[in-house]
Image 1 (cartoon, rainbow, N blue to C red):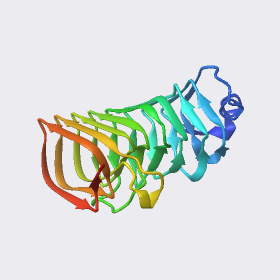
Image 2 (cartoon, one colour):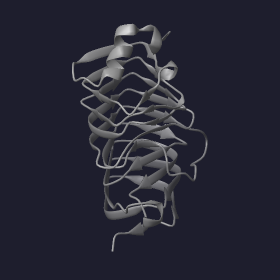
Image 3 (cartoon, helix red, strand yellow):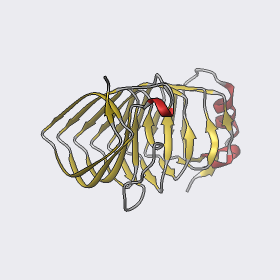
Image 4 (cartoon, rainbow, N blue to C red):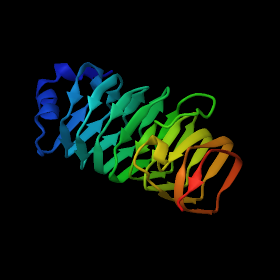
Length: 218
């Protein structure tokens, strides 16, 4: 059972003030709050629910941790992310939880993603437009996003989509370095408009990879 964030006065004020004081927020439901243009620093969210469309659109996020949180088909923009981790979190429904260009040190550890039964042809999803690692994660029917570096380590994904890098027709071009290790892909792995610099795959297997107009950096 979670509590609307607007009912947690101290926590709600902290999320709006842009300060760097450390705080742990437990059991909050974030859909009732509006956080636009602010920065989140040194925050730990434990057992919180994230939902809503556009109610979280941050300038930046740094030094934050998400532990055992649930992302219930939200559309959130976390701004430029620096040293942000998600541990044992889960998504339900097509979720957009993404950081902007220049994000670094973004880690999804032991998370599960459930976006549906097929790999969607979409560019927005879970990750960031910078450097992101997925480690010991599972998922189905979701879009994973990386701008400049994608590491997939010890993951099991079924019918997933990957939006890696950015082609010129969608904005400033980005090319990603991709490393996949000890991971298994079943069903369709869809590569949507990807732009890659290098790709290194080891100790991994895939059932079917579909390339939707992806390219390598010239």
